[in-house]
Length: 251
Ligand code: URA
Image 1 (cartoon, helix red, strand yellow):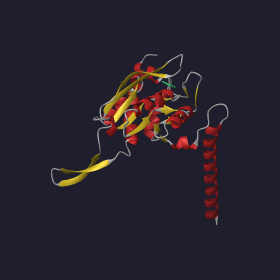
Image 2 (spheres, helix red, strand yellow):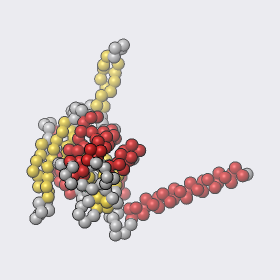
Image 3 (cartoon, rainbow, N blue to C red):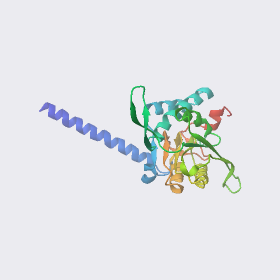
Image 4 (cartoon, rainbow, N blue to C red):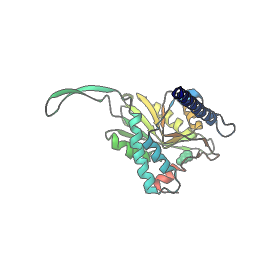
């Protein structure tokens, strides 16, 4: 009898904990005035990479006292861990190989080499870590700036490998903030008609996710965190500051 009562109490505790967790989650997205609500369809579009190693390294990077060299090292390590998740569903093909002992059929990634498309300049900070895991990937660059009068994204550099129609592309930028330059970069990339596009960032916020979801619902987002909100200067809060400045030591 006593055991039965203990079991009931335990079940009730777990139920309460779960309710508290979902209430917290609900409040997080609904708090009035501090952030925009994130459409569940848009949220479903985001893969949150919550592996403990990724989360641990991200916390170290966020700290304001992290030096340029440790920020870079952590970014490299994080990028190599995150690219694992982004590549999880790459198509495979079977090939016949010979081990020192036998012939066997084994798997390799199918199709032409992947393209990592970096949005300049902070995107370049993620490339090395990704290339350490996928050394054969091709690298493209997209440079955009915002015209202060029209507020439109203006292209100043665009270089991609040939035969993009046969390639899967991962667009990279550490911060998906307003989402405007990411959306413009993806728009430009679509003119090359790649086989598929994914977007990888370290951090985003509801505004960035919503912009990308509205403009490119066919482009899934991979990130290590969805932070609370954007401030009036377009910085993510709590965030990690200006990613480009922290990578290149220009602050
Ligand atoms: N770009 C950054 O580098 N940091 C932000 O918080 C937002 C955009």
